[in-house]
Length: 364
Image (cartoon, rainbow, N blue to C red; front, side):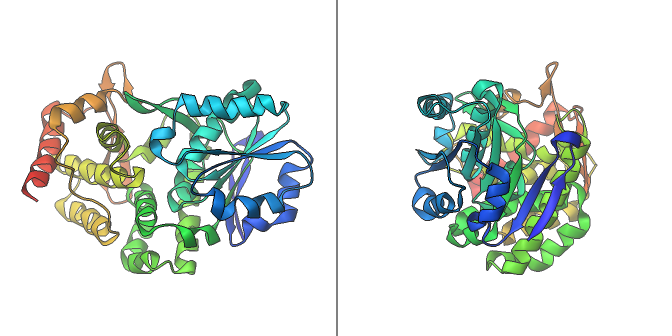
């Protein structure tokens, strides 16, 4: 088992990475103690892992609550259902929520934990590659609004993250590829050596080589932990973790959260950010090619659906948390391993990038 610390002073917490963590009774006893605990999971994960986790829990008041599976259920209404269960079960302020699932479960349960009685503890137990390397770490919690993704939320750090590599065995291939988008992101934004390693080992990751997966998860979590420790509330450098997300969130919203997975939209968004960086003279074509090639080898999309259009995407990008004082801040690239945040991307260049990918879609 590997342990990485997210260094936030008195609110620091561990990320545990290893096999069999769901069944590790001693670790759960240390984390939960005798507190009331509620495991929140979804209809897909429930039959796979809920019983195993329940058996590992300390004796006491441990309940579970199952929500529907899918991004379209990451809503205030479903969060209301979670809080209703906590109230019905008379959960007190010293309780602990346990988010057993992917990014949707982690985000919505984290937001419920942030709001219930003005904040209770949460342990993140991510079951997808994407959530293990990204959404479970850093304390961002949220639900979606029909006009924008993650527009209602709060920062609420977990007390621990439990990344059990064994659960990835049941992950569908498409979900694995979507998770690789966030893994690749860390190499693009700040870790060029890791990017080169990914270029050499992408086939092993796709074949689920356990040692390669463990290294990729560890390296990704180290990168994220370092950034979060430096800028917890995204006032500065943490914004680079959003590479591709402004484009990607617009794509997801434009498709009503029903066509692409989050990681697929981020993959497309990262390539669009690389293209825009090249148009602005910041990033050489050879590096755009390297990024596109790695994403393609990972089985990720590099062409937009033809149901989208430039004006709709641009409108959705304006309803984004990275808009400040009427200006859109974008994460762009000066090289592989070197991301920057800027509000100086000309509108015509941005629209040319959007047009170029939509025209590619039309011709594909």
